[in-house]
Length: 217
Image: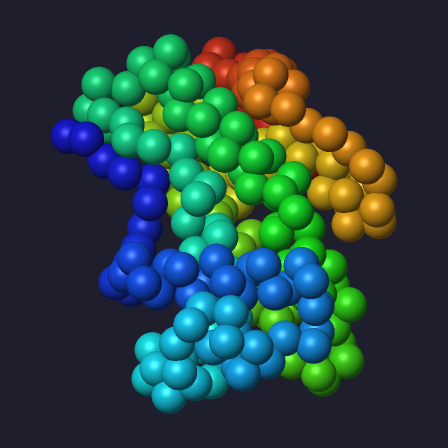
Protein backbone atom coordinates (compact mmCIF):
# COMPACT_ATOMS: atom_id res chain seq x y z
CA UNK A 1 0.00 0.00 0.00
CA UNK A 2 1.43 3.37 -1.02
CA UNK A 3 1.54 5.77 1.89
CA UNK A 4 2.47 9.43 2.03
CA UNK A 5 4.49 11.13 4.73
CA UNK A 6 2.36 14.24 4.27
CA UNK A 7 -0.23 14.47 7.03
CA UNK A 8 -2.59 17.33 6.17
CA UNK A 9 -4.05 19.02 9.24
CA UNK A 10 -6.57 20.93 7.18
CA UNK A 11 -7.59 21.65 3.61
CA UNK A 12 -4.70 22.84 1.45
CA UNK A 13 -4.79 26.56 0.59
CA UNK A 14 -6.23 27.52 -2.77
CA UNK A 15 -4.00 28.97 -5.46
CA UNK A 16 -5.15 32.50 -4.54
CA UNK A 17 -4.51 31.85 -0.85
CA UNK A 18 -1.06 30.51 -1.68
CA UNK A 19 -0.32 33.81 -3.42
CA UNK A 20 -1.31 35.64 -0.22
CA UNK A 21 0.95 33.40 1.89
CA UNK A 22 3.84 33.99 -0.51
CA UNK A 23 3.19 37.73 -0.11
CA UNK A 24 3.46 37.31 3.67
CA UNK A 25 6.81 35.57 3.29
CA UNK A 26 8.10 38.36 1.03
CA UNK A 27 6.98 41.01 3.52
CA UNK A 28 8.63 39.17 6.41
CA UNK A 29 11.91 39.36 4.49
CA UNK A 30 11.44 43.11 4.01
CA UNK A 31 9.69 44.21 7.20
CA UNK A 32 10.08 41.54 9.88
CA UNK A 33 7.91 42.25 12.93
CA UNK A 34 6.42 45.32 11.23
CA UNK A 35 4.20 43.03 9.12
CA UNK A 36 0.55 44.16 9.18
CA UNK A 37 -2.67 42.88 7.68
CA UNK A 38 -2.91 46.15 5.73
CA UNK A 39 0.51 45.61 4.17
CA UNK A 40 -0.38 42.02 3.26
CA UNK A 41 -3.69 43.08 1.69
CA UNK A 42 -1.90 45.73 -0.36
CA UNK A 43 0.89 43.41 -1.51
CA UNK A 44 -1.51 40.56 -2.35
CA UNK A 45 -4.06 42.88 -4.00
CA UNK A 46 -6.96 41.77 -1.83
CA UNK A 47 -9.06 43.31 0.92
CA UNK A 48 -8.41 43.01 4.65
CA UNK A 49 -11.91 41.60 4.96
CA UNK A 50 -10.87 38.70 2.73
CA UNK A 51 -7.79 38.09 4.86
CA UNK A 52 -9.86 37.99 8.05
CA UNK A 53 -12.39 35.70 6.38
CA UNK A 54 -9.70 33.27 5.25
CA UNK A 55 -7.28 33.35 8.17
CA UNK A 56 -9.04 34.91 11.15
CA UNK A 57 -6.45 37.30 12.60
CA UNK A 58 -2.73 38.05 12.25
CA UNK A 59 -1.74 34.93 14.20
CA UNK A 60 -4.02 32.86 11.99
CA UNK A 61 -2.35 34.32 8.92
CA UNK A 62 1.10 33.61 10.35
CA UNK A 63 0.06 30.04 11.23
CA UNK A 64 -1.13 29.43 7.67
CA UNK A 65 2.11 30.92 6.34
CA UNK A 66 4.29 28.66 8.49
CA UNK A 67 2.23 25.61 7.47
CA UNK A 68 2.56 26.58 3.83
CA UNK A 69 6.34 26.88 4.12
CA UNK A 70 6.65 23.67 6.16
CA UNK A 71 4.46 21.74 3.70
CA UNK A 72 7.36 21.91 1.25
CA UNK A 73 9.32 19.55 3.51
CA UNK A 74 8.25 15.98 2.85
CA UNK A 75 9.77 12.59 2.22
CA UNK A 76 7.38 11.58 -0.54
CA UNK A 77 5.51 8.31 -0.97
CA UNK A 78 6.64 4.88 0.13
CA UNK A 79 5.26 1.36 -0.04
CA UNK A 80 4.97 0.26 3.59
CA UNK A 81 4.35 -3.37 2.61
CA UNK A 82 7.32 -3.66 0.23
CA UNK A 83 9.82 -1.22 1.71
CA UNK A 84 13.45 -2.05 0.96
CA UNK A 85 16.70 -0.33 1.90
CA UNK A 86 16.97 1.55 -1.39
CA UNK A 87 13.44 2.99 -1.14
CA UNK A 88 13.95 3.95 2.50
CA UNK A 89 17.23 5.69 1.75
CA UNK A 90 15.60 7.52 -1.16
CA UNK A 91 12.73 8.69 1.05
CA UNK A 92 15.02 9.91 3.85
CA UNK A 93 17.37 11.60 1.41
CA UNK A 94 14.42 13.30 -0.29
CA UNK A 95 13.27 14.65 3.06
CA UNK A 96 16.78 15.95 3.79
CA UNK A 97 17.02 17.68 0.40
CA UNK A 98 13.62 19.34 0.86
CA UNK A 99 14.37 20.48 4.40
CA UNK A 100 17.80 21.92 3.58
CA UNK A 101 16.36 23.69 0.52
CA UNK A 102 13.58 25.25 2.59
CA UNK A 103 15.62 26.34 5.62
CA UNK A 104 18.34 27.91 3.45
CA UNK A 105 15.86 30.06 1.52
CA UNK A 106 15.73 33.80 2.24
CA UNK A 107 12.07 33.54 3.23
CA UNK A 108 12.64 30.81 5.82
CA UNK A 109 15.64 32.61 7.29
CA UNK A 110 13.56 35.80 7.62
CA UNK A 111 10.60 33.93 9.11
CA UNK A 112 12.76 32.16 11.68
CA UNK A 113 14.62 35.36 12.60
CA UNK A 114 11.32 37.08 13.34
CA UNK A 115 10.14 34.06 15.35
CA UNK A 116 13.33 33.88 17.40
CA UNK A 117 13.44 37.66 17.91
CA UNK A 118 9.92 37.72 19.32
CA UNK A 119 10.10 34.52 21.36
CA UNK A 120 9.25 35.22 24.99
CA UNK A 121 8.60 38.90 24.33
CA UNK A 122 4.82 38.70 24.27
CA UNK A 123 4.73 40.63 20.98
CA UNK A 124 3.16 37.76 19.05
CA UNK A 125 2.87 33.98 19.06
CA UNK A 126 5.07 33.39 16.03
CA UNK A 127 7.68 31.40 17.96
CA UNK A 128 5.09 28.93 19.22
CA UNK A 129 3.47 28.84 15.77
CA UNK A 130 6.78 27.96 14.10
CA UNK A 131 7.49 25.23 16.66
CA UNK A 132 4.04 23.65 16.40
CA UNK A 133 3.59 23.88 12.64
CA UNK A 134 7.24 23.70 11.60
CA UNK A 135 9.61 21.52 13.63
CA UNK A 136 7.00 19.41 15.44
CA UNK A 137 4.73 18.94 12.41
CA UNK A 138 7.69 17.97 10.24
CA UNK A 139 8.68 15.39 12.85
CA UNK A 140 5.22 13.85 12.69
CA UNK A 141 5.57 13.54 8.91
CA UNK A 142 8.87 11.70 9.00
CA UNK A 143 8.43 9.42 12.01
CA UNK A 144 5.98 7.11 10.16
CA UNK A 145 8.74 6.53 7.57
CA UNK A 146 11.21 5.62 10.31
CA UNK A 147 8.68 3.33 11.95
CA UNK A 148 7.96 1.66 8.61
CA UNK A 149 11.69 1.09 8.23
CA UNK A 150 11.81 -0.51 11.67
CA UNK A 151 8.79 -2.72 10.88
CA UNK A 152 10.52 -3.85 7.67
CA UNK A 153 13.63 -4.81 9.62
CA UNK A 154 15.74 -2.08 8.02
CA UNK A 155 16.20 0.15 11.09
CA UNK A 156 16.68 -0.56 14.78
CA UNK A 157 15.70 2.02 17.40
CA UNK A 158 13.69 2.18 20.61
CA UNK A 159 12.08 5.58 20.25
CA UNK A 160 10.94 7.21 16.99
CA UNK A 161 11.22 10.75 18.35
CA UNK A 162 14.80 10.16 19.41
CA UNK A 163 15.65 8.63 16.03
CA UNK A 164 14.02 11.59 14.24
CA UNK A 165 15.97 14.12 16.32
CA UNK A 166 19.20 12.31 15.46
CA UNK A 167 18.43 12.39 11.73
CA UNK A 168 17.31 16.02 11.99
CA UNK A 169 20.62 16.92 13.60
CA UNK A 170 22.68 15.00 11.05
CA UNK A 171 20.92 16.82 8.22
CA UNK A 172 20.93 20.31 9.67
CA UNK A 173 24.25 20.30 11.55
CA UNK A 174 25.01 24.00 12.25
CA UNK A 175 23.55 25.29 8.97
CA UNK A 176 20.37 26.86 10.35
CA UNK A 177 21.98 28.68 13.28
CA UNK A 178 24.71 30.05 11.02
CA UNK A 179 22.10 31.33 8.57
CA UNK A 180 20.11 32.94 11.38
CA UNK A 181 23.25 34.70 12.63
CA UNK A 182 24.00 36.13 9.19
CA UNK A 183 26.63 33.75 7.84
CA UNK A 184 26.52 33.98 4.06
CA UNK A 185 26.26 30.26 3.30
CA UNK A 186 25.55 29.55 -0.34
CA UNK A 187 24.03 26.08 -0.64
CA UNK A 188 23.54 25.05 -4.25
CA UNK A 189 21.57 22.01 -5.35
CA UNK A 190 24.67 19.82 -5.66
CA UNK A 191 25.84 20.71 -2.13
CA UNK A 192 22.40 20.08 -0.68
CA UNK A 193 22.18 16.71 -2.41
CA UNK A 194 25.64 15.72 -1.13
CA UNK A 195 24.78 16.81 2.42
CA UNK A 196 21.50 14.88 2.29
CA UNK A 197 23.26 11.73 1.10
CA UNK A 198 25.93 12.07 3.80
CA UNK A 199 23.34 12.51 6.56
CA UNK A 200 21.35 9.50 5.34
CA UNK A 201 24.47 7.32 5.27
CA UNK A 202 25.41 8.45 8.77
CA UNK A 203 21.90 7.73 10.02
CA UNK A 204 22.03 4.18 8.62
CA UNK A 205 25.44 3.71 10.25
CA UNK A 206 23.80 4.50 13.60
CA UNK A 207 20.40 2.87 13.18
CA UNK A 208 20.77 0.35 10.36
CA UNK A 209 19.43 -3.16 10.87
CA UNK A 210 21.79 -5.56 12.59
CA UNK A 211 22.98 -2.89 15.01
CA UNK A 212 21.86 -2.49 18.59
CA UNK A 213 19.14 0.16 18.94
CA UNK A 214 20.90 3.51 19.24
CA UNK A 215 20.42 5.28 22.54
CA UNK A 216 21.14 8.85 23.58
CA UNK A 217 24.34 9.35 25.54
